Image (tube, rainbow, N blue to C red):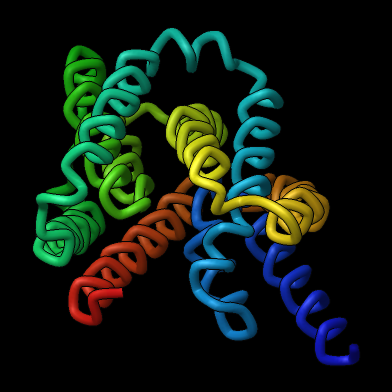
Length: 251
C-alpha cells in the first residue's frame, strides 16, 4: 500500500514537471515525464498514461492562445500534411527499419541544432513558411506514425521561422501537436491499450499537468526571447540524442 502511494506521488510529480516545461516552452512534456515515470512503471504504461494529459495540455494551450485565428490561418497546411504523414507512417510501420529511421533523423536534428546555434542558422522567409510547413509537417507525421516522436521535426520547422516570437511558437506547436496526439490517443483507445486503471490514471494525470502548465506560463513571462530560443534548442538537442539512443538500444 505504501509502495503504491509512493508510485502515485512520484507520477504526480513527474506529470507536474512535464506541465511546467510545457507551460514554459510549449514542448518537452513526454521527453521529461515518460523517463521519470518509467523509473517506477513499465515503459509502455508510462507512455500510455501520457495520452490524456498530452491531449488536454495541447488543447488547453491552443485554446488559450490570444491569436489562435492567425495561427490556424498560417499553419493549417502544415497540420494537414502532419495528419497525412501520420496515416502513412502507421501504414508502413511494419515494413520500415525504425532503428535506421531514428538514427538518421536524430543525426539531422542534432546537426540542425548546432547550425541554429551558430551564425549560419537557417531562417525561413515568409514566402517559404507554407511550403516548408508541408514538408516538415509530412515528415513529422511520418516519423511520429512510426516512432510516436512527432516533436523534433515540428520544432526544427518552427524555430526556423524568423518572426515567430515565444508566445506564437507555443501557440503554433500546441495547435500542431493537437493534430498529432488526438489521432494517436484515439488509436490507443481503439486498440484497447488505454483502458481500465490506465485510463483512469491517464485522466487523473491531467490535473498535475495543468497545474504545472499554469506555473510554467507565469515563468515564461520572465524569460527573454533569446533565452527562450536557447532553451528550445536544448530541448531539440535532447530530442535528437534520445532518438540516437533509441536507435542504439532498439527500445
